[in-house]
Length: 118
Image 1 (cartoon, rainbow, N blue to C red):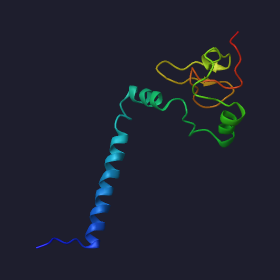
Image 2 (spheres, rainbow, N blue to C red):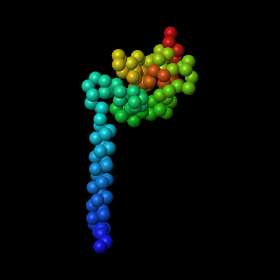
Image 3 (tube, rainbow, N blue to C red):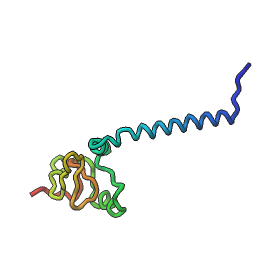
Image 4 (cartoon, rainbow, N blue to C red):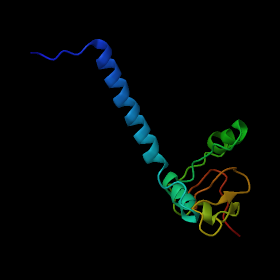
């Protein structure tokens, strides 16, 4: 005798497998994000210094359009940690700051506002 599946049972199984897959992916992506003190540092290093979720639209525009900030500078002589506007990263943090450009700033990043440290 031949086993036949109805369209309804096929859809139920497909949706079930998809839901399990999405749930597993969500659990795996959450792994390691709450590891005490070192988890945040690892997440920052992995994501780079590009998380601008806390910035307003004008601050994002200043960062990308006006100053043309890049996470990695093409000229090693003109990187952020050699700029007088750069604010050094706190101990254990991957990203520093800038007195003009808002948001996390990579030490080896650059922008068109770069000014050599005095």
